[in-house]
Amino acid sequence: ELKVEQNPLFLSMQEGKNYTIYCNYSTTSDRLYWYRQDPGKSLESLFVLLSNGAVKQEGRLMASLDTKARLSTLHITAAVHDLSATYFCAVEITGTASKLTFGTGTRLQVTL
Amino acid sequence: DGGITQSPKYLFRKEGQNVTLSCEQNLNHDAMYWYRQDPGQGLRLIYYSQIVNDFQKGDIAEGYSVSREKKESFPLTVTSAQKNPTAFYLCASRGDGRNRVGFGQGTRLTVV
Image 1 (cartoon, rainbow over the protein chains, first blue to last red):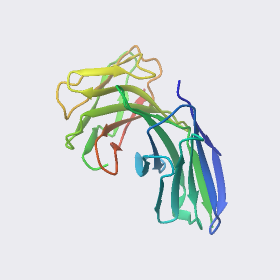
Image 2: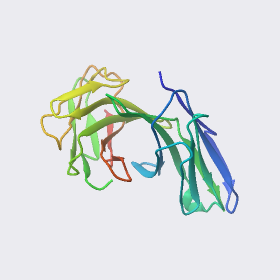
Image 3: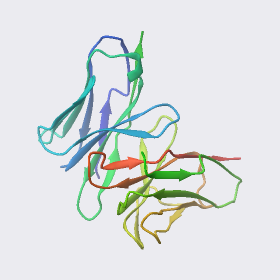
Image 4: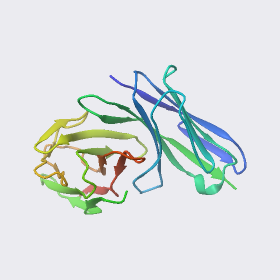
């Protein structure tokens, strides 16, 4: 059974600081996704990582994938209050049943 | 995500009642998914469908049923057998492109 673990589960950080969220998964994966969720809202797609060594950046967020270590990271640079949200990673294993298995989420709170 | 419409946004269910949540997409995606999210939790897969007239159980299918008679529609019925249905339900579809798995805006179901 595929397990996806995120840490930390909760992160409080000051504006301007850097931090990294980690996503570990238990079996070989083809794709890894990062999503953002604001309170009471649906999920917004941030990144799709398709291969080992993939790195994608948008604004203050950068995601990377190491398939050998079964690890993805979401790095936050110079955090701003608007980044406060819950961030989920999700692992997809393709084949006859392509579906996403989600981590438990990391609630990020950026304080002024 | 644009192109995936869930309705209603809020739904109230009485004990012993079946209710149906709607999910429609105009993205011409083959695969569609239903997830459940409980407060402070990640997403758990209920049912998914890779093609019209075919669907599979996810991790928590008990008490739910689905149909896939048309490519663009994947309704979810929450039956009276689901003992704890209060949750946020999210529909997703999968296609090619950057945002490979996008989500609808969700339906919040409450038992009254």
